Length: 383
Image 1 (tube, helix red, strand yellow):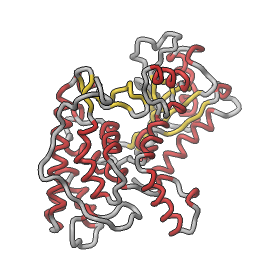
Image 2 (tube, helix red, strand yellow; image 1 turned 135 degrees about the vertical axis):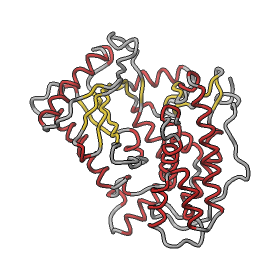
Image 3 (spheres, rainbow, N blue to C red; image 1 turned 45 degrees about the vertical axis):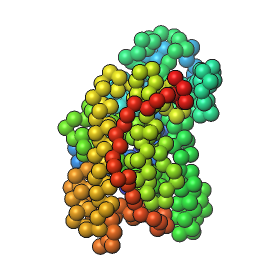
Image 4 (tube, one colour; image 1 turned 45 degrees about the horizontal axis):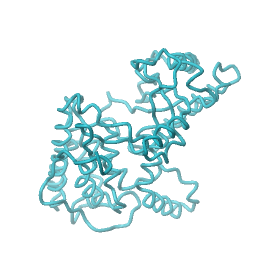
């Protein structure tokens, strides 16, 4: 994704934050802080497949001076909605404000090709820490925990301590911890090349093999499930399993090999269901819908086997046409063709090219036989 898109998204959520802090703001006294979450924060956003699709900029508006027992989820969402509607009008945005289950949706002009989801939130540090520690679970990431709204939830209209939990900042820090050395190396190399300090290089200016692999797998997922989006693995599952599997590999090819070989090893089996715990809140199961929709677990297994087969076939070939056709089956012919045209005639698979400013390293290899997810035994070592 072009840097200009990241910068455009950054300007948008910062502009909203400035609006909420203006002198006549009705929420200024509650300490609103707007920040981005999701793939934009992780650096794993992929371009829309076509001009009709849009970038989805996920953001949070955290009211740092409000607590869960002072108002209902509905009241918090209404407070923010009034201000976002006023912002929309002040910015002469023609498309109406939309209400989602957990957020408000701001649709920008067609030419911008993106919309922004704004999730109202409150700090939830103490409650999250106490909850996890009482269960003997890892609470190290709870310093950025938040409580969010859900209009379909049973407690939406009640004043209660029982709010839906989230922690996008914590998840991003966990994700970055899985690639910390690679990220630092790339930022340092880029800083040296442009004669700047490492601190001056924003994270989105570089891309690690883990980030690149996640993006490739998300695109492969999108193409595989074109026409049946309800069955496709959600991005947070792909991202979480990939980050667990990544082990500091220096090239995209090496990262893909290790990730595809290891993703299903991090799917747990707990209480007679598949369980992919949120690393920042192990009580949250990213695969919770698989129990209700077992076809989604099957779809994940089929997709993983397909990805292993196709990328292994591409890695074994040095013929540009064969590589492009093979990869094109997974990510789409036009995208594979564009990628091939950007490369010099290869002496081996383009999958072996390094990530960003990474140095050259060893090539890609896959297991001889594909593995499909089976029911893992145990949960954190015990039932």
